[in-house]
Amino acid sequence: MTGHVLLIAGRINRQFLRDRRFLGLSLVVPVLLIVLLKYVIDSLPGLIRLGANISEYSVLLAAFLVHFLAYVLATIVLVRDRNTGTLERMFVSGYRRSEIVMGYVAGYSTIAVAQTAIVLILTRLLFHVRIERDLAAVVLTMLALAVVSVGLGVFVSNFARNEGQVFPFIPLVTIPSGLLSGVAIPVEDLPRVLQWISNIVPLTWAARVLKPVIVKKESFLGSLPDFLVLLGFGVLLLALASLTLRESE
Amino acid sequence: METGPAIEIRGLTKTYGAIRALDSASLRVERGSIFGLVGPNGAGKTTLIKALCGVLRPDSGEALVLGADSRAGRHELRPRLGYMPQTPSLYEDLSPMENLHFFGGASGLEGLAGHVRESLEFVRLWDRRDDPIHTFSGGMRQRASLACALLGDPELLILDEPTAGVDPTLRQSFWDHFRFLCGQGRTIFLSTNQMEEAVRCDRVAVILRGRILVSDTPGAIEGRGRAVVTILLAGGASEQHETSDYERELPRLLKAHGLEQGVEGIRVERQGFEDVILSLIQEAE
Image (cartoon, rainbow over all chains, first blue to last red; front, side, top):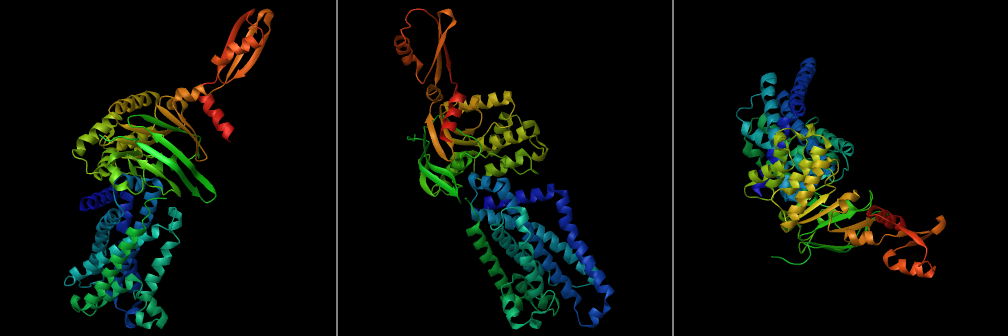
C-alpha cells in the first residue's frame, strides 16, 4: 500500500517538475494575490481604522488559496486521468482506489506545502506578521486543509465527464468557502442559518484554528478541537473519495 | 499448470441507455492461442475488452479470465494480465521509461528495471527512453503502450487494436513476437479492424452491435464463403452457378445439365476471408 502511494505521489511530483508553465503559475499566482492584497490594503487605510486585522486577512487568504488550488487541481487532473485512460490503466496495472486517493493527497500536499511556504514568507515580509512561533500550527493546518481539498476534488471529479464540466463545481465549493468560513466576513456576523451552514464548510474549521493562533497569539492546543474537526473532514472526504472513485463503467 | 480456457464469457450483456453495447456475447479462448476479435467501429470490441479487464460492470452474464471472474477476482488477476488500451493511455509529460516504471511498479514485479529495458528494446524505443511521450508520433505512442502491456511477461495479453498506426515492418515483428509468446504458452486476445491481421489469428470472432456473429478458425470462416462457378462451354457459351460448397456441388451441376461432354473449362471465384466477414456483417445488419 505505502509503496504504491509513494509511486503515485512521485509520479505526480515528476509531472509538476516537468510542466514548467504549470509549476510556475502554481507558485506565481499566490505571490500575485498576496501582492494584490497588500496593494488593496495600503490603498484603503480606512480598513485598518475599521478594525480589520491584516495578519488575519493574509493568513486566512493563504488558507483559502491552498484550499482553492488543491481542490481545483485534484478535480481537473482526476477527470483528465479518466478521459485519457491513464486512470483505467492504473487500475488494470494493480493500483487500488484507496492507494490512488492517498497517492494524490501525498502528491498534491507537496505543492500545497510549497504554496503555503510562499504565502507565509510573503505575509511575513509584506505584512510583518510574526508567524515563526506558530509555524508548526500553521503548516499542520494547511496540510490538513490540503488533504480535505484533494479528497473533495476526487469526490467531485466523479460527477464531471470532462474537464469543461469541472468548472461549474469550482464556484459551488469556493464561493461558500469564501463567504461563510469567516475569511471575508466574520461567521458571528452572519444570519443564524448561514452560521449553521458554515459548519459544513471545511475552511471554517481551518479559520477557527488559525485566527486565535495568529491574531490572539493563543496556544495551538486551545484550537485542537477545531483542528480535529478539520482532520475529521479530511478522513471523511478521503473515505468518501475512495469509495466513490469509479473503477468501472 | 492450470487447465481450462484462458477466457470464457457467457451471455455477457451491457447496455448504455438504449444502446446495447454487448448483447448476450459468448466466447471461449483456449490457452496458448491468438484470438482475434473483428468488427466495425462501435461494434462492441472495446466494451468486451474492458469487461475482460474488470473495468466494466456487465448488466448480466459472466466473464471468466484465467479461471476467475473478471470483476470479482480482478485484483488477483491483474498481475497476470497485460492490457493495451485502444488509446495509448500514458502520461504524456513523462518518458516511456518513467511510464513503464510507474505502471510496472504496481504489480510488484521483481527486476523491474530489466523488464522495462527488455520491453522498450523490443518495441525499438530504448534509444528514446528518456524523451517525453508528447514528442512521439502516433505509432511510437502505440509502441510505448504495447511495451507497457508486455511488462513482466503476463500469462494473458489483452490488446485493443495493437498495431493501429504501426508501420508494416514493425507490425511484422509484433506478429512474430505474438507467435513467439504464444509458443511459450501465453494467450493473446486482440481486437483489430485489419483483415490481414485477423487471418493470422488461431481463431477469430466477428462482433456486430454487441453480438458475436461467428467464432471459428480463419480457414473455417473462409470456408463459409460462397463461390461462383462458371462453366465455359464449347462455342463461347457459359453458365454461372453460385454455391456455398462448390467442391461437392460441382459434379451435381455438371450431371444435372448433362455437361459431362463438351466442357472446355471451369472457373471458380471464391469469396476471400475479408469478403466472407463483410457478407456476415451485411447479412446481420
